[in-house]
Amino acid sequence: MRAGHVLPDVLAPDLKIVFCGSAAGRVSALKGAYYAGPGNKFWPTLHAIGLTPRLLAPAEFPLAPSFGFGFTDMTKTASGADADLPPGADDPGAVRRKIMRFKPRVLAFVGKRPARVFFSRPVDYGVQAERVGETVIHVLPSPSGLARGAWDMRWWRALAKSVRG
Figure 1 (cartoon, helix red, strand yellow):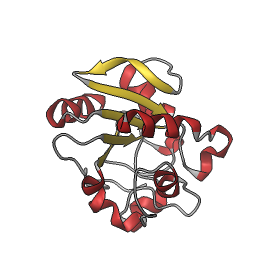
Figure 2: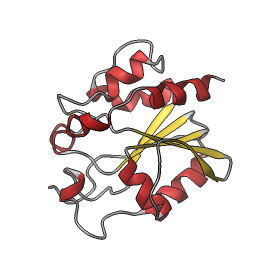
Figure 3: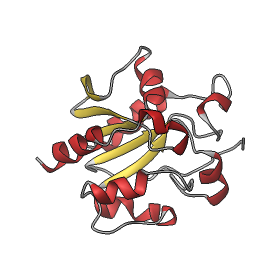
Figure 4: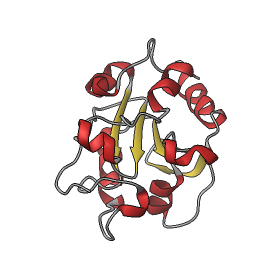
């Protein structure tokens, strides 16, 4: 685990999607790039569902706004697997304020854990009834290699369809 500001937010006004994970994983923190773990399906999935015209490398994450998306995490001050995050490190209020400020079309939680923290209740995958202002909220299966058992690309395809439509 690493303390301090682990990965910078990548946010801009009027993005199509802001992806929000729990926290930077161990490899992502070490490499200084979002979704950088060798078994992580994030970048290949974005390309497969048509959100990027080519497969981006994790180190290219600063280019995200040029493709219409951005990044934040539920905790910005710690890294590691969900089970390793310290109590009190999550900041759902900060996530809500960022979404209210930047007004993306969609807030996409990458995994159920950050969505559970945000809503303070259990969640299912897919579009949620609640919104933040006009921002629609999706909950997606985690692309992490540690979450292989929950992987289902149909929720990612539904996200892509909703931002194209």
